[in-house]
Structures are given as C-alpha cells and as structure tokens.
Image 1 (cartoon, rainbow, N blue to C red):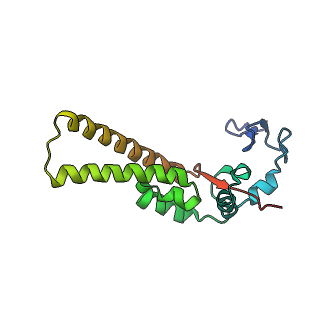
Image 2 (image 1 turned 90 degrees about the horizontal axis):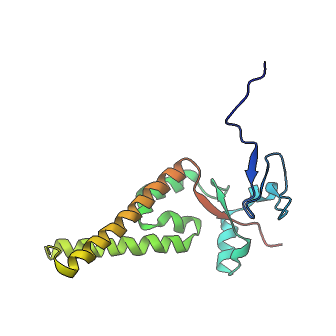
Image 3 (image 1 turned 180 degrees about the vertical axis):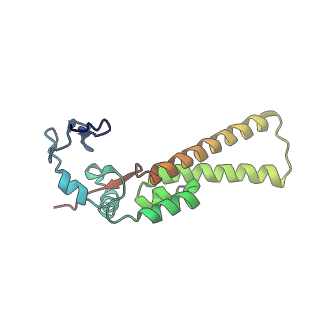
Length: 163
C-alpha cells in the first residue's frame, strides 16, 4: 500500500509573475522564467542591478543564494537586525533605511527622556508614546525577521547577469 504524503506540495508559484503551476515544470508558461537559471542567480548581481538603476531584473527569493552566507545572515539579523543591518547586507537598502531611521528616532527619544529626566506631560507625552509605539513596531518586525531568516523564508534579492 502506497503512503500518501499530505504535506507534499503539488504546486509552486513563479517568483516573477506569481503564476501557480505544477512543481515539475522547469519554466514558467506565463513569463518564461527558467527555474534552473533562477536558482543560479546571485545576490551580488542584484546589488549591481540596483546600483545601475535596473531593478526590474531583480527578483526576491526565499532562502539564501549561493553567494550569501546563511550563518552570517542569521548572526547579523540577531545582533544588528534592530538597526536594519540584515537588509543592508542583502542589498535591500530602502528597508534598511526604514529600520535605521526608526532605531535612531527611538534612541533619541530614550536619550532625551533619560538624560533630562523628563516626565512626559502634555504634547510631549503624546509624542513620547507615539515614538515608543513606532520603536515597538520596529522591534516586532526585527523579531519576525529573525524567525524568517532562521526558517529560510527571508526574501533576498537575486538577479541573473546581464547578457
């Protein structure tokens, strides 16, 4: 009697056009993305594409491509991820700037509060708690990123060399 695996995926989605297709297909029928070539795509080439202003040829891939150290990404995310370092490491600069800006805002907020021993009152009270809330959201996103990197679901930009 044959065992049936209920967890086996029978379909996959194209990373470029999100078309759902059988796992066995080697090429997307809609956008003609070759999955063998996509698996060879590198993060370094994606960084080059971004710097050349050609972000259209960059795709996001779950899991680490061959030129990104998974252990290094995990360590950077755990120890420096609250500042956005893991996004800078993989070339997603806009998200890195988002994390960095809100980290600095949170630090300034904490510094002003602790050094001046200000008890938040009035308008400062509302601003203080708004900044604490924003910093809390960034910390929550950082914790989610740690989990995503550890389970190999973090999206990393990759691109094929320009021909």
